Image 1 (tube, helix red, strand yellow):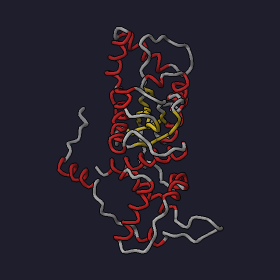
Image 2: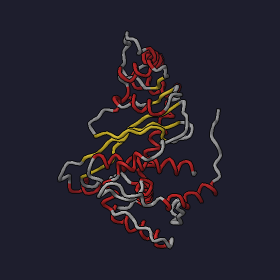
Image 3: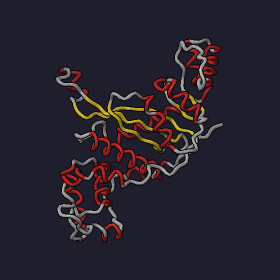
Image 4: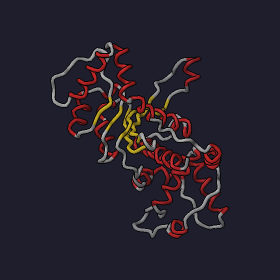
Length: 299
């Protein structure tokens, strides 16, 4: 069955053009609560919504924190209001608070998700410099793990870790965050572990994870679906070719939607993060995911 939906390219192109619009409308309720009543001495007076708004603008327009302060100040001035913009240091200090005030990343209730991980650079030279002159210092990354609703292509679960955390250890967290209606999970060979498979078996979730090319039958509870995949691959001739044919008949191709999500994320916001502390790196990444979902809904 062909589930492809014909796209209205004229409307789609206009929506892409609108992403570059700098026409803003601030809700009057937000403006009315721009400054909170001061509590104890030294407490920043700006409402959480203001800090969250600043981080969204920073993400969409890829602004450094100092430029963000000037950008928001210019918008407020053009609106004819005397409200001040928060200082760039305040955006940094209250970054975690801004993230915690975000709504749930998605309101969809997926039954099938694709899971994958990728890296975002936090330090080190660019690819061209390394190719021509070699690396002078170690490049470092953080890992972002995502779960994508295969029907809507929205991100429904996000987890940020350091680069040393294995993919398989994060799968349970992603599935839990994705909701209680999950019936099927698609993931690549990095998730072919007893931990992942037994967890999915316990949750009564169908798995679509390729077995190793020379995989053997394992007589353990929770490994039944893996053993069935091994048997199917062996019927197709075994080895790499057998696994490739298994992928074609199992519907594994939908897992590529997670790779597509990473491609959009990096093309829109870049592959490098600006923050230095891990906490703020996580905040920056989460905001990118929320904004990407917002753009996805507006397609």
